[in-house]
Length: 346
Ligand code: GLA
Image (cartoon, rainbow, N blue to C red; front, side):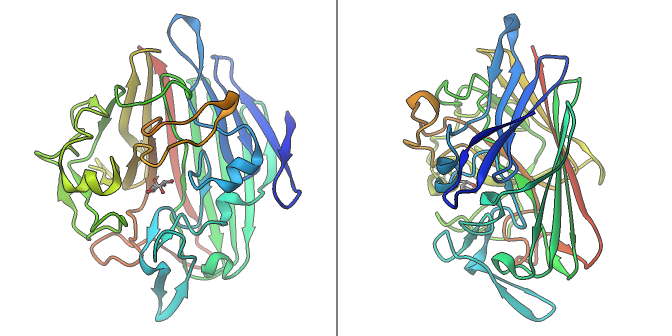
């Protein structure tokens, strides 16, 4: 159930683990970053379509700053000035994105080798134990990420973490989806619906939120009725100019505190629809704005907007932003969230 993929720069072995169901779905994972590697889902006319942007060697996964498919921990997206305060104590993490921290630093947990605790036909559990102050974050933190491929063609991701000190945790998965096929080019024609009447605008191109939770009404950020991802992407609207496309957190219109459907994407070419379900309060829509020239399998060159990400999360920089729900995890209290990417054909 596992095969050698290659070695990382430290000479550690990187393996591919394969899960399958009886309904035509097959997903391959890497122990490097507990990464979603290949994601085959059924499309129309009986085809099997690989919908996740990948590299074909471990060194590219390690070197590139795209975070293809990786689990991001402890803290997804940005932390301003790479600093935060908990109970009067200042903690510093890596400033790897201008003066700010992105995805917990360049050589964070997303680039580490995880342990496989358990694997069955359709389920795999990856664990990682971070030491106190690893990447600057307080607490010895035990992480467990459980991936399941269900018979309903869902990829379910359960996130669990337990820290022995009060800390901040905001985990996500960074899969880049292209529902017309990972190597099919721009996703601008693919449709997207997001259940959000608000989003969090950013100050400038460095993408730290202003702290506002602004209405999407009358802006290119209104995905409350499904529209092509590229329909408004080139509008002369500051927020789109900063990130060269969408790279923003949406504040989900939660019906309750529970688990619910928050987004749907669709590619007409393959008929593949993907519904996103989560219990998180935010989702980052990132339209592959910095995909440009990275090499995929068979010498494929990824193009700008060659995929989209829907990263479920707390809001970016929430640990420093009083207007946002603060992602504090108390000592010895489990952090748990769940996100499901459900595939169907229409
Ligand atoms: C997130 C960020 C983007 C970009 C990608 C990875 O989505 O918000 O700015 O860094 O990750 O490249």
